Length: 342
Image (cartoon, rainbow, N blue to C red):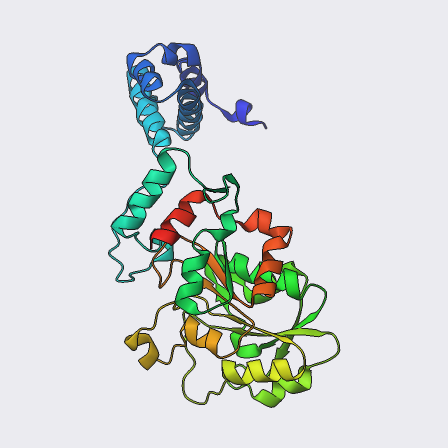
């Protein structure tokens, strides 16, 4: 038997008694909500509330009055119109919490974002030449000065930086990575997945807890383009553990005519005693060690807006900036303003 045949006369009568859409739209709380939000939001709220009312009546609930429905629609409309992205209190104990907006901006950075957001800006205009400029130059000079890198490029996050570097310099080629560094980053995205999307072929070497220099060297073939070292960022292996230093890997890569790329994850653009004592390599130290390319986050330790920073040899960084993917991965003016001010 169908639902309508199973339904009692009383339930059918209650369903027929539900006010129509037009009746509800004429109720003052709904009219008021339309003025404070918009017609489309209110119409969606009416539809959703009526669907909920029918389901409740079929389940045996008593019907609500027209006034009660109107008040519920008003509340739903206002709730729907609230921004989904709004301030929160971080009481987790995790300072840079990726689910709670990442790094709070410094006052100077927030001011820079507000000034750029309110009007026009020199995003792609050069004041020096009075002609078209490039957004790639914003913050680049500051990053070069801080790290000693020949050149720098900003993209919208560090996963984008990894994707762009691999797509530019290793698409269709092999990239050697330690098995213990095939980490999962936020949102269940994994380094192997990012590598696959770039067109590079992953070559795993070593064991989860120990990888030796010889493991990398034995994996090199004529199809190898790059050796990649990935910072685990949010976990650490201790005890029976061994990994190869960036300096040793850079020397090995250059010995075989390969590129060496280090994904530093959170990154540390400035030397910090606590980080150094904890065994963390700073970005300037990595650049000085002879790495070809380094990338890191612009917001985790640095505290700017979400961004990814690519640094290294000028020709390699410029090749990344000329890749077609750069158009999709480039940052907007608000992120650039926050990064530069920070």
